[in-house]
Structure formats: C-alpha cells, structure tokens
Image (cartoon, rainbow, N blue to C red; front, side, top):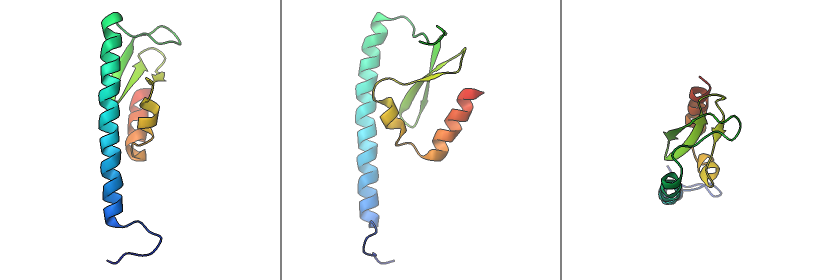
Length: 100
C-alpha cells in the first residue's frame, strides 16, 4: 500500500490515536482528582433536576453521572469534551443502556 497525497499516512493515524489516548488519560486523572476532592465534602451526589441519587457509570475512561429517577445524564466539567472522542458505536451503546 502506498501513500496518496492529501490522505493521512498510517503513521499519522497512529500518532494522533496515541495523542488522543494520552490526552484522555491525563484529563481522566485530573477529573478524578477533582471528583475525589468534592466527594470528601459531599456524601452523595444528587440530580439537579429532581434530587434523585446519581450513579456513576464509566465507559472508555469517561465517567458520567446518571440519575436513577429521571435517567438524566450529567457531566462534570471537561467530560463532555472527552465523550466527543469516544467512537460513535460505543457512545450509542452506553446511551441505550442509560435509558433502560
């Protein structure tokens, strides 16, 4: 297989995949530290819409909070940006699980 002008090479794809994975790990570590600090002061998280208990669910290094009552999905600062890096098929699977 040869390289075609205007198309990324295999090395470029690998480089950016590694950078994305590294960025996800770094952000996850930062968000985990922030969450741990908040959890020391708050016993449990509640849904801002209806006061229901929020459950934490994880997929692809992204943790989302899901309300057990209204099934609302809540993101901490920076998590939505991380979700945008998740493959579409994986995101659809998680969204369908939240509703059920």
